[in-house]
Length: 567
Image 1 (spheres, rainbow, N blue to C red):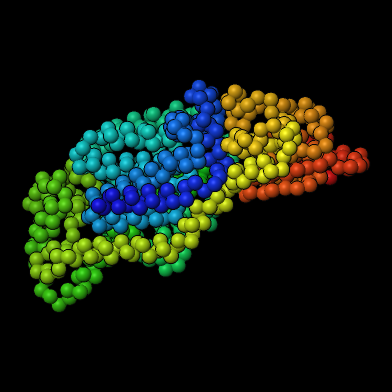
Image 2: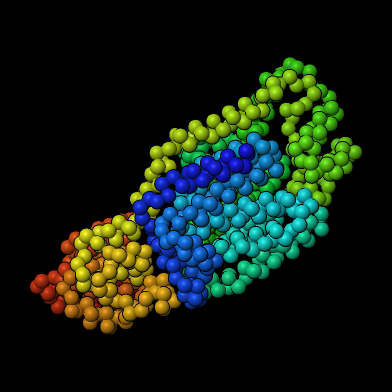
């Protein structure tokens, strides 16, 4: 139950409002690439998006079943549900069933989890891979094989290369547990194979680093938003600060802390630090680190309940330390039968350091509960009642944030709604109308929703994306485009919403002609804006502009200045 309930809750939340009525830009890319043939996808990866190559191949198989928005997002929902179950399994294995149940539920209701569970991108699947690898790490430290751990890591790294940062977190877990050299050797071989699989991908993606040139150096606000998104169900108020307090209490949870805390802190900290010199940070690239937060919150809640129980027994006779140690060891054996040998060994070493143990044990010794100490008169129904109280406590912040959850399932909550833009095209454009995409990336709108664009005339396109091995197709040169624009009196523009009017100078010469000619020789008649994308109709100015006003928009002048003059 501790694992099944979080999985069911995450599935329900993920499927709720999954068909929100429109894809945004990145989802549109997944949709158009996933519907290409395998050779066409392979051709594309040589020039762009190699970091998402395995994910695109997976989506090719998924969309072959049914090409639709729900199918596009369904793998992410399943990935998030799997992650919730794996977080719960970690809590059960590292602490006790109720800790696993609470941690899995907290992961499921965290808004950031639900947001990426409903996106047609790879990040929820990467989170599932990292959580699965972390569970396999714990199992390997108990004496199981290292190779399942290495295999899951390799697949996860191919889904997104920044998942490799989890190796640093796992190394800290091993260092904290003071494992022997043989364990380090097993881990090193598995991690080395996984990293070796990633090396060719990293080498190719390095040449495509211009795709993340839009990222900026993270500042204090970036770090604060990440912390608030990771550490609580709600980013402000009593629930947030209660979660922070419980995390601080949970830092004393022994082996759970040695696994969860590095997972939560290390990958984001490394990427934030590197991004001070080369901007690479975005929260979705380290979404997998979020799994550490609910584990620590649940462990803190469990320790708080134990402390409250002890306070209620104040004044009763406290058993001797030796009796308590024996009872704790028995309880630990009941919860961890695979550690019988290790616990037996440690039972003959009274006073041993709590951070040491048998070589085959997981990080740190098991932290058995104190609720079964001799002399306790607690009701046999106490534990289920405490577990139920914790579940109800998790439900309170979810119900409090229900309006925010509902808003997140609206297409308006994403950066743009390509379906809304295409619907406006269907209502306003006439067959044969000329259209330009500025920059050419926004041709993804017509690729994701081609119906309304059938019959219109793409002035710049010379070869489709599928045939040219690009996302948005190959366009004509600046001179030919200028000639084509000279023969039209009206043109529709699908553009970045902040570009027209603008003093931005595009790097692509064809895009510079689009911007210069339309901005200088046409006037906007009507427009429709959806987030980052704008659809506008431009009509040629009548009478023509005077030569003195038109001169600054010549093609020759644009490349010479990063901010060409505008009329």
